[in-house]
Image 1 (cartoon, helix red, strand yellow):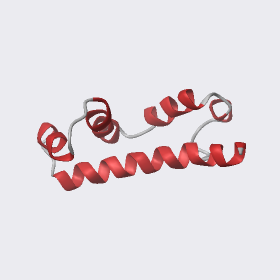
Image 2: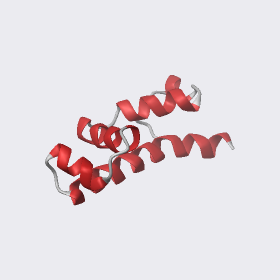
Image 3: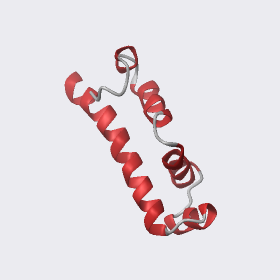
Length: 80
């Protein structure tokens, strides 16, 4: 697992680890993630709301998902 999450957090259930991984994202990535996944906005809609280019929104979204996958994925592989 990524060394970014403390050992005690790595032992918690997936839902808790997911919340911790999201909290560790930079605010700009968390905001894009929330707009896209929670509010259901498209990339273009989120870009308009944030006054960013669609390319920047997609980049932040992809980076956020990759960071979360890195943190959670190693723990899942280890547990298997």
